[in-house]
Image (tube, rainbow, N blue to C red; front, side, top):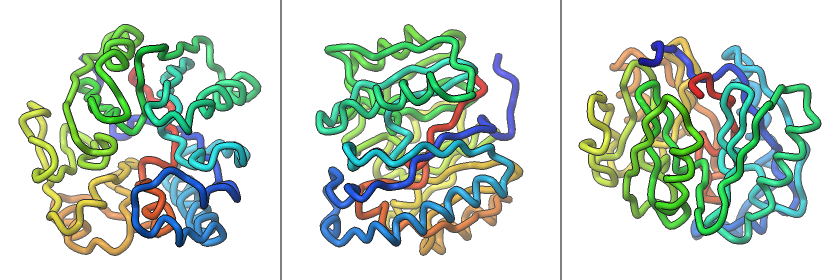
Length: 266
């Protein structure tokens, strides 16, 4: 049984958007309107909020060769002194995980074990919902069943449960808060996929707010401009912190996408 934790991580890696971010892989119809200067400003706000909430933030340099590399959640899953490096389902992003692994090896953060998801498996961090009661992994267009099986083999002492989804990533439709409570869009995901949890449901018109990040002490980072979600969180005893995300929304990214936490659970 995993000890109940208020926040599942105290350290997170981030990477500011490169100039090439305008060429990111995105289905958003406004992806050709990305303002990189504004994206950098929003990223700085994001980092400041993390630090204000007591999270140690390690900033990695921009990677011009990888337009999507600001979305640090995807290339790896980090645990206590270990790393599981992804294999992207999106072929254009392959190589980000190698760059990140090389940076980790040169950093002051102790990583004693590095494992790689290998062919034919694919696994992207945006498909992994981490809770004290196991990992839930989206079997999506980006993560396949072989990737989920490899992850389960690498993770010790944690259950790994597949969740079939048509979403880009599982975290587009849900995110974990604390104390067995989740944000979820029931129109996109079946709550029965997460037995034993309580849910704060997100209205259809605010689905983007499903991708939110719990940062401890009942504080939740949510994208700005979603008043119904903010009110629901307040009524449930949470403290929503709004962060501007317009330029990352255009790139198909959400709040959790911008950081790679080092989790305490594995």
